[in-house]
Image (cartoon, rainbow, N blue to C red; front, top):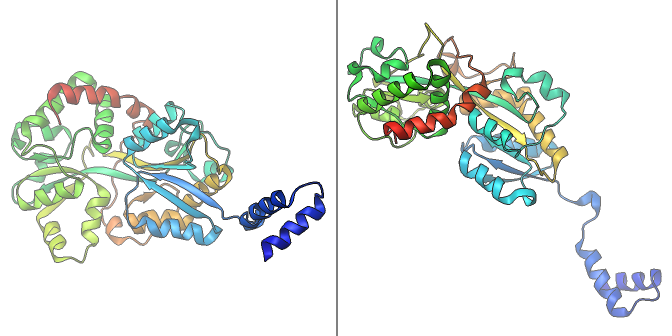
Length: 356
């Protein structure tokens, strides 16, 4: 047998050891692959739950031969896991879908700064941490959708109008504490201050058609059905319906309109999805390579074509006609760190006014 032959070879090299010891050593050697044959792996902790991302991961593995092990959790549960695992965490890359959560993780020391000329050249400064601990790779806008029959679009041209008495009994949202809303509310605090934001949030609660529930797609469908008159959603959910071939989705789109909020003032609220190298990444070099891949033209175009998000790298050509059909808009320029710093205050206000 091969193992016994290997044991004999071991005894020739080390004549002082027993036959049993030589056999144990031979078995160990036979089960250990050569260094060059060891499979390269990358452990990704992801808050991105989009089935279309499979192609993104698959292309990286095809390019590099790296096997990706992925754990998917919500933003906050993901951060809780990283904190609990501490120095023993196997996470290499952390992907998140909210700027506030990225900033919070950075502040808690869960990421490590990296040096990458490619990333700093391709990712604009406003879409990455100042210390290069995280990088944004795609962004999205938080827009207002309305029922074409029930609501005059003039009545929902700003976020502030969601709290106006004219929209009494018409407003629907997902949970106020969801990262997408919490970041918006943090931006509103930065613009209006805590007192006015509290008043605004209280007005939204007073105008709610029902208690907050479901995701953004659920809000759009509730608007189409007439259960709600107006709702908040991220743009990629809306574009997903625009691109759908399903008759039910086409019917939803026919009954719902979309507006860019606050175009005469601060601009529509923007958020981003991004990634970082975990503080204790066991495969740091591969992790950096993966982030660099996400900044490539191919991956950036995929964010647009696959998940209806805007690339952050300038000049990337995309082929998403539905996304492009939304047209130009004025974006809110509130700094990510300032918006994120207000998230704690935003949650306090939500609790105070009873916004679930």
